[in-house]
Image (cartoon, rainbow, N blue to C red; front, side, top):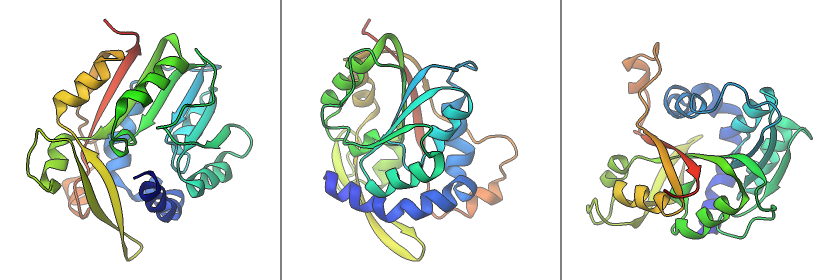
Length: 234
């Protein structure tokens, strides 16, 4: 599974580096504004792990606000794109979120993971690592596909199943196979609550000024849900 995700995102790297920031309305008008508003205004000198950095948009935003950022991604091409964006101002590493992470306990004030966890079948080991490397009052902020989006592509058409979907996304005139896991909302919540306490669940609305006409130009719906969680269980 990991090699299929890596292959897909290696192929996407140029698109993410040169197009997504200005032309992907679902990122611009939904997911990114929803995620960024959940961070405190003051993050100067805070340590942040960008877990699944893609081409480094979040990494750059955190750096501009004075945070000390470490960025990681499974795709070597995405890692290279992030390095081109931020230079040596952040540590950028090619790592797999399903492996043990090479960071000391209590290393980070925040872990931000944007549209990544649906590529991970078993969240347990990943959340265990996140919990280990977060500071005791640290925050994990993550976004994933909305379950109602994925059910339309489910092989079984069973909302309550956790199953692998092989989707196809068109980029630069080519179709690229993208594998990810769909899971129902109760599983998303319960797997998170096994390691963290949930402060907020958000289903983003489009930012003001984004017209329906602009949204209709998009070829597919990529809904997201966003969660902010605290280290430690209730």
